[in-house]
Length: 429
Image (cartoon, rainbow, N blue to C red):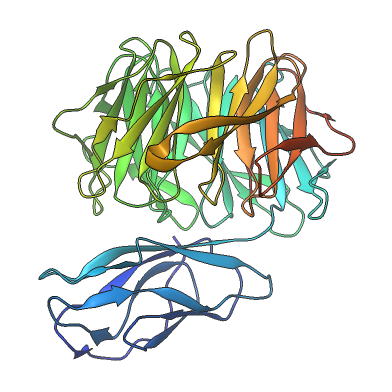
């Protein structure tokens, strides 16, 4: 994880309790945070931050962005930034910094390659990166994720039981292999916590989750206790943007588990009352940016399960009945604003649907748009302008502009864009 160099005083001034958290994705310069006490804090890099002025017990706090970073221009948003001091330091404020998507990457399962693209910031269109496609350094790549700082790409190679780590050239988007990590049997999904500290790998055949510590883009040895046993045949996993919880779906048990992440070790502990039941065939899980709702796509049942998240414990509570869909939702993703949920429907409809998120996390169908054959993975660019769908059987990527008012999807000029055989998973940097 990148080193932190905010300007801090040598001692805590004022009250005895401090307010702080983590900045992720910061690439530009000039970010300044403000607390409600009127104090400013310049932050120069991703990492942890703490305001030097303390607050008394019972005092309210509100962390906001005073100045956005530039060169490159980024938009930083604050999650979990308000509250009341309750006899403890505040350490869970998260500041996420993003910019318009720069690069997109697709794991081509059949071809055994990674397709890389430059993203046109105005249209969302894709242009192959020089050198693409890149060898996946394993067989059957099925899942990939870009780290929160946008510097590294992690690829799960299902057939060779490894995760390949690639450094992303910040100018060209080209990939350079930096490490290959042995994991469990049948790795099917990868995720990274918002602080860019821990890597999580779901091993479907072993029914485990492997956990690794991340340091400066490389991955150290597995953390103590790894791999951790989970419910049978884990198919997807997602770390909550705030709250320190990992959510894992189980294909065999038709459930989703909530596991508390130890912020120091990265270790996992199942929450009391977990797992929660889903529909049959849960294949994806996504979390709203506020970490207040979780959604699970049930392929066999053809439905989407909605859960409320306890903001204190991370526990899940069913919120209404599963929503029936027109076809099986293989992949789900929520846009950065938290206003819309997008679903890749893989059965005969071969379409992407958008749902408006209402009170209590309720979903209302907003629109549908044609996709390629067997859309299996979705990604939204960091600015929330475009939606990308990897179509496995047609081996291409559908790209849509997102109407910020209605959530409606419109295919961009040139869509779909060619990928490799078995385009299984997509990630956007």
